[in-house]
Length: 383
Image 1 (cartoon, rainbow, N blue to C red):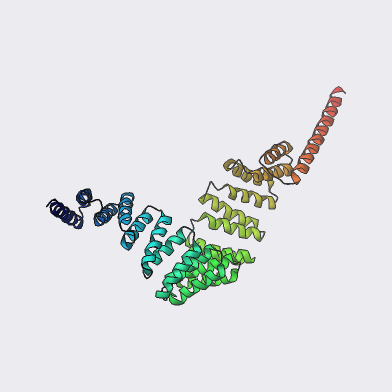
Image 2: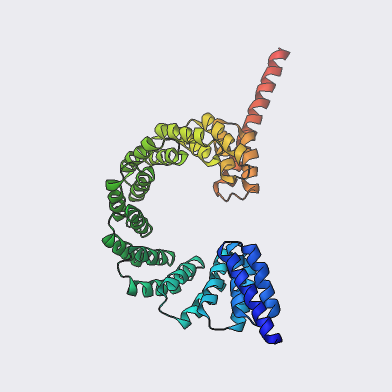
């Protein structure tokens, strides 16, 4: 009689809990399911439902706790493993999620949706070979899913197997030639392979479908720089700027291209536009200073090296460059101070010591001249 009463009581509690769960009263459902397991601590379904309720409330740690209790009672129940795995994903514990999905797939290896999910997690944790193996299993079932070819390509990209990455990206394009961003990926892979003309061709394929894309012109410019075609680079950087004139990096790169052509006036013009947009970029002030040095305008170079130093007082090279300018214009005291700072900050330019010696000689010469001038003045006064 007592067993029948408990069994009937548990059934009532379970029905009440289920009713509350299905109307999204998860807090109420949790209270009722707790009553069920209090009456019967071996009732697996109640632990499972407690996990479900906590999962709906985004209490993933509690959900994991209850799914784990259910798994302890029924070791090989796929749904419990799947659900606990999903909760591990939600809290960012991808390794434990992979373990649960793997155990689940031992129960049913035909669950290709789960294989796909495990592959994505393998990629996230850097297990690229394992991800490729899982994605390949998915391709056996869905050979026309271009996204899978893309994902395998991404794995090979991470493994720096760039030829294989290009192969899979191109297979993705064969299936879906309208995915213009795949041309960008192929172009990037070719760029990393130092196949710059191939990269340019792929980037241009992108532009055929989406012509007003500034960052693609930027990438084409970068490829032309690598090829040494600086005028072509300038043309493409200018196209990028015509689309997006607020990107300081584009003006910076344009300045670099002009520097490569020894066109220092245009280089300076573009560097100054870059610092207007990014006034705290000390390295651009340094480039302006370097361009003025090439024009032998040392006083102006000092101004911009000083701005670079103001923004980054740990830049040994900027101190060395400013010292060289001081040396050129005869400010030997200023040069010596900057050479000392450059050495203190770790500059290893072999010419620094030679320049310091030359400054000291020049200062001695100045002192000798001053002494001679003073003696001459005194003689003149004594006449």
